[in-house]
Length: 630
Picture (cartoon, one colour):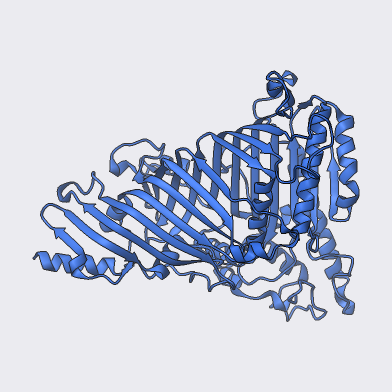
């Protein structure tokens, strides 16, 4: 009996591990206890399970010791306890993007079928890892991530420990279930250093100082929505909550960080564009345009709870209560510092950020409501109006080009970039599918109405668009217009005057830039509210989309003019720029077309702000489509 059960366990483990043998597994069936040593995980299955991006390749994953504890008589209320001693993972970047994970409901590690008892048991499992080490390598740099005491547990919807049966909310009418998990860790240590081969070839012999960041405990609150029919994941919400951070960052480390980021930016951008389109197509096919919530008497008691915690779209969030950042200049003491008498020996600038919140919504319908966004409020009524004007302008220009295309001329001129116009929201929102056969059209290439460069072909006709008119074809494409939204909100910011080795103690606490609380602004007004939105179409639809837009709202800030601080910031920036140019990071590529709007409430020392804007005005104007300063 024990050998039969042992073989069944090995059969299921073989989906995730390789080189398994019966002598590695010690199992006590009646006690519900098992031990496994020297476990080597299957890289391909683990990559599929974690949904790693296409630019990242997992090469090795091992665990030295695993224990499993199962309470056979209390499986409904007591979770399975899985304990791992040390997990070592090795990753590397791909020279070319690897084939993306197949967009199918049945993954290689799933058994298939409806969501049942075994799935509830697996989803409720508690996992404890003493140590996790992730080694990352790329042609430009090497990095390591170390986490200690990692715990993954099931929680109730408000992320409090309760009965295991309260860690999920099922909605049979919609055929979906919500799962609530929490991942905790005690210490996170991040280190990154330049690769030797790359460092020797740097022009200018700029030293790339290793980066180190140690954080205290943190957690990740996860809400996962699955389909009951096939156990596939429909959407998820991940909230990373970080403890207070203190980071002393030198200019040399800042240059190294920018160099590391730039080395990955090309691959990451290509992979993001590819995966975003595929996943957006899948999500549109999985979910209808509108969810009809039934509040009738036949609704189950848990239905209101499901509506309250529902994951309408996938999103990622980072919350940090406080960040203390200390900037120091020690890279080039001779030529990189200001010649001011008090700054020749160097200085340091402290910046404190309170309640930093970052949100990312990669699959948001461009004309959908934002009411379900996490703790979101409009920074200004003018933002939505401004975006609507841009989209309306795009629609008008595009449709006017289509209307005059009867002569066979190209829709776009050389002066009209691909991303500089958009559709009317009213037309798109009210336009809905007329038949169930429209959804598979997402798989069609739009070559019938546009070529690969996004320019409409001269032979646009009713035949080429399957009987649809030109305007209705535009409306059909933009009904599926998606947007990728990044939101950054900052509650408060304090920048102190630059301090040196000869400055007094009182100067170290004197403020240079603060939030003006005497303005008595509403509580929902943040010091800084930044939104960046880019547009794309799902699947293989190749069609012009609106240009990205960036909106920045600045609350009332008060600036105390201090000559040494301004000179130090200027020298720090110029030295940083010189190093980036030496590393060929400052070479501008073809500038993207972006609409930017900046709003500042009650700024004090406005003359100083305008002076700073004038310095960068000439370098910015040739890269911006529109720039607003309110």
